[in-house]
Length: 159
Image 1 (cartoon, rainbow, N blue to C red):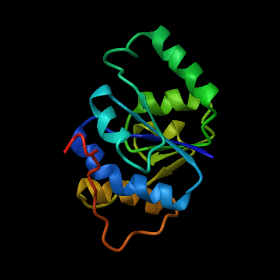
Image 2 (tube, one colour):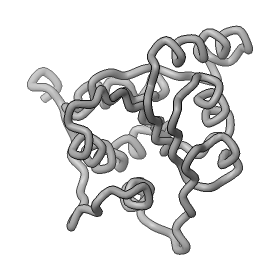
Image 3 (cartoon, helix red, strand yellow):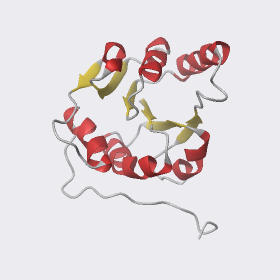
């Protein structure tokens, strides 16, 4: 199984998404988990042991033009992802993944719901970002961790 995790755009969000990425790894231990992120977040995700690969997506830069988006859709089709979790509430991204042939697309029920195969309801009350990402997975049938907490991964060289 190949799973695409569509992250948000900022380093803090990546840190708060870590428990949810770990939940995906625990549920699908043999899956190839690929994170889609902007270039500034690549390095932090590459250090995460629960992530197999990182794909950069920069819709304000490298993927701004129609031609580059068509190329990106082609790459998605070649990757043959089985499932995508959209932590980023982007109608554009949901549309691209629909065009990219990703069979199952899970995200919160927002403006992008038309392009999702499973649109889960937004939480009724405001949640901490970490809980917001975990809740998306719980709504998709994952078991909620007792005390979700995030981990920050880095190399000895980084230290």
